[in-house]
Length: 229
Image (cartoon, helix red, strand yellow):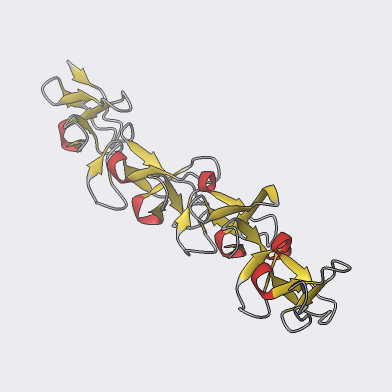
């Protein structure tokens, strides 16, 4: 004719006031009963607790417990306030502990977040790689390659366009012409006989037609007979 003992206070309850908790399946009375915000079902007060973020009351079945290692420690949260960090092992954390990846919709908590060295925005691990040259983290948008080293991952600020051919080249395969200061591929630059410490592009150098040695524009002169340098 009811319950011999409510599991909350061990007091008996008649059939009219006896209940079975939908979450823990234990007997309780109507005095120790409340409503879960997830679906509006009833549960015992032992299974009900306020969400650590929005303060909505949810039962143990519809709540998520975060780990003590999460940014804000162990907390009981409702499902609406729970997200899963892309880093680590996709552990549950609160929505107030994460930021969105700038490249996709994944969430990254403050412990596992990392930023692109170029745009300084947070990205998830799927969109970050280390530059083979500087070992800095760069996102997909700011990742580049050198024409002369296509298998290497470089950041966009480690690569520039050749003023002669327009190809993307890194600092190891490019240099500046000492005349115009513009960046050129090594293939479009030459060392000079009369200026051994300088490199010049095709537009700012000449070649002696006798021995095919490269000189600066002032290092050769035009022959008055054949008009060759």
